Image (cartoon, rainbow, N blue to C red):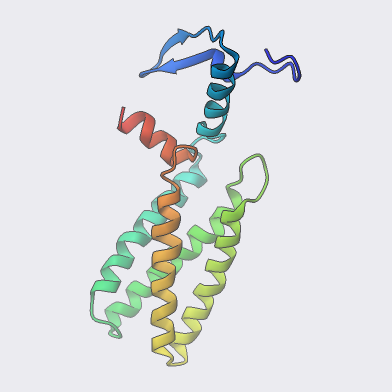
Length: 171
């Protein structure tokens, strides 16, 4: 128990492996503080809810569909229908993220979601007004920025998906 706050550090009990529980007595104060800081950083505060699962599945589908669209011929009817589906998936992913909050607060990722929604509308406008080169740049930027780069951030150990990946799949 901390003398200043009276809070119990989660490092006093550490889970090892798949559910085995070990009591760890940490007598060295420096090791104790470092371990407490690591545990607080590496443990996500959320669980997989239906919204988080549907958000992740829609993002995965948008990632796969986007790869198909980017690799195919552009401008035909199939491209337009797949583009509409991708637009719908991306709108769901970006808008749905506003329902996913840690401790009830918005984070920097919600700024990216707002930017994504604006750029989706702008990309659609560019396509409809015949400014195809701008449409292409916007959609490619969204694919690489909002899906690939933001998706890689979800694999960090302190994020829900990353924590699950590093503790369950790679253990």
